[in-house]
Image 1: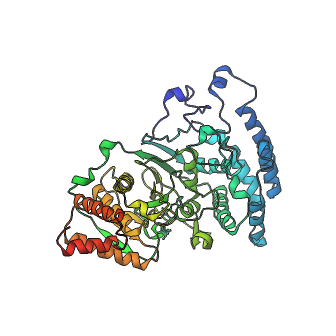
Image 2: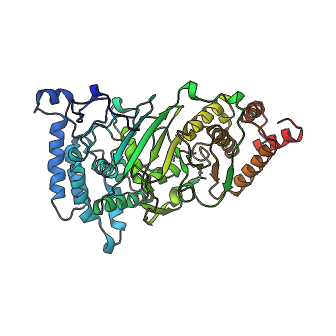
Image 3: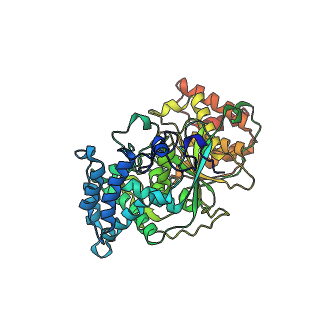
Length: 473
Ligand code: APR
């Protein structure tokens, strides 16, 4: 399952080096340095500076935001005028005095960050575009990597000023969360600091696997000729994917750079998922932008927080005791698939067969089974919020992809009663008529033609109902 890093990218003994095929760590020695026993300036020198300042922080019993800022700016001097810390400072102020765990937490986090050379000895491969590959990390390694992200130690991995070499990778340093204060950021920081509090108090002991799945054209279904029939569907307006889809493959309504705006102001389904399971954030360290036939599957991440609300109403409610069992790899039995829908500037753009096909392939890539006994999928209005998709069409696309992959669907409409009724009705009709995926594809093609010729007054359900009444399904 774990793809080993090809030998030419790492030192002979598999140790980490500074190379563009693996994650460049703040403490990575360059390959030429490894060979020559080099001692000059460069990444090694920077790690010395980091060690000095985080070391000083870690040796204290208490530290405040000004101390954290001072340390971070010592090894990021070129951002002196750009990086702000008002958000972190205002977050600290809203924590009730009696449970202000932060002053003692900052030193513990600095100590954890400094354990990087000890915890992560081998190079972490990049999950690069166009290749199926997996990385498995222990939860302790993840906590150490995220502590480094918090202290902004990763070279060239900031939201602003990203080096061109890194354009295809998400940002990982937490700088954007620390400045430009807002209620959103305060709540986000509560969830993130809760995570650090728990992992520094009692280090978690499991593993987490991150698998980038890339399907070749030959592996994609021929939608026009598919004879597959729709499988089971359960639609509900109650509950959420992450709470009520336990034990199922849970869909992350992702951005192509996984995690979307989690380290900035974004607070929609994906960002919330990343905040309550912060280990997901580490995927940003090594997952290049997802292509049309790719997705990222994460197995084993832990839930650390409970929340309420969505967007501006998001609130951190409290810590969570994760009661999910573990598999034979000691991974928590939670599987999440990050799949990015198309972002339509205008909803009318989605009624284009090529775009429908792209969405079918993307959903199929996410839902494809690799073995027997894989669970059904927990999903919902994928691509229908920030990305402007239409729920009836997206539900049908996901049903078709699930049928092709051999999985049932649980569809959470997230309190949207109309979509619940529409999707249920559409499903009943299609199952009654015993349609195949290929017939549905042809039907969507007809519907797209209607929409591009001005038939915007008829929704997909009405169109299907009409065709059914004329026995034209
Ligand atoms: N469970 C089920 N449904 C949910 C949940 C949840 N936990 N959270 C939200 N929803 C519903 C809401 O009705 C929401 O409007 O899913 C809809 C779509 O959610 P979005 O997050 O807007 O998804 P999408 O349109 O795919 O936008 C993706 O948003 O979060 C960013 O990084 C992400 O850039 C990407 C974009």
